[in-house]
Length: 163
Image (cartoon, rainbow, N blue to C red; front, side, top):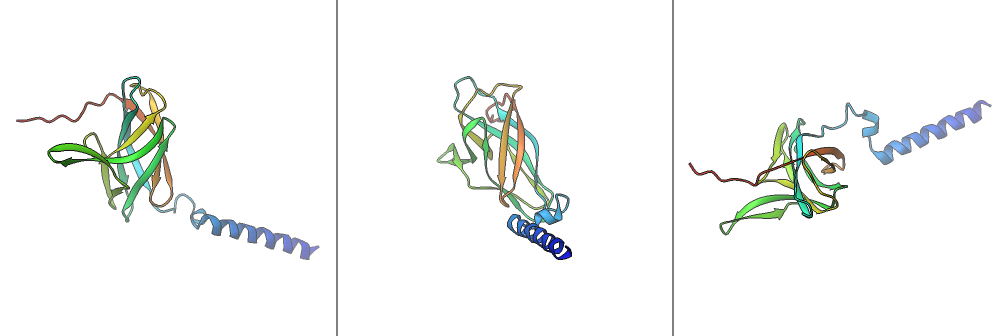
């Protein structure tokens, strides 16, 4: 009987080890010891008039870790496509362009804001009205994801003040 029990224990341990190898060593460390991830502060989406097909999401990304991190993509139930964008000045005009990643330095932060880096929601599936929320899943450079609930707010276009 002991031989059968030992065989079962060995088989169980072998399966557990195989599962850990397949899923990485983060499962061994547990959430408290896993590598630092980005934190999101004050996420909000731009309210748009009914029928508008695109919007943007803004937030502050905070990296408390010792290594740089990056936001590399995302998805949302509210849009067909989610892209990372920035604004640049070209030929005297502000132009929006897609970026592959948004870097967040070690022990630092990056602010996504109107007129700068932001997350585009393209092909909206529903109206974004003030007071509502938009669920987003942000893809990070290490393969992990962050679930975010962005409040929908009225956001004024970037204004230029001359003094």
